[in-house]
Length: 150
Image (cartoon, rainbow, N blue to C red; front, side):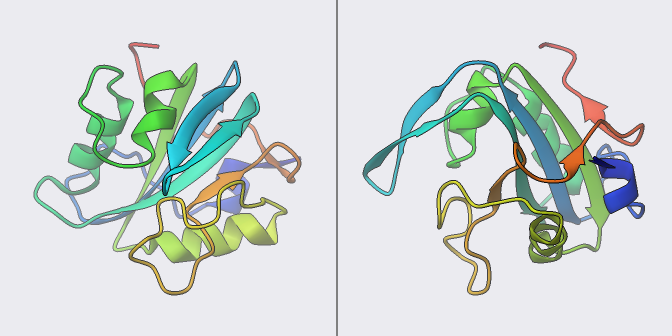
């Protein structure tokens, strides 16, 4: 098993106001049914990764802070997962690219449970949501910021 800290040694805590990319590690304790692109889906319990970008005001900290809140009005596809998650942790990558994070996770055996999910504006990634259940990735990083509400 490859720890997230080993796969992402360049990660920083996600409480930085810098712009760049972030990685959410989302644990579902029960199956999650939802819809994406007008198609119903069900995700099995387990651990998933979501790679996103935060280039607006407040940078990575603002975007991750929103994702860590359970109570919110759904806006992004990933909100379906973050609102149902048993646990969420986050890592920040100032100046980083969400696509580069996806590439590293795929190289470690992560798969795409929902093609197109979270990547509607991306021309190179199959998805920005990855299934870590059968990959070589696991374990928490001391660099992760956890949601205290969960």
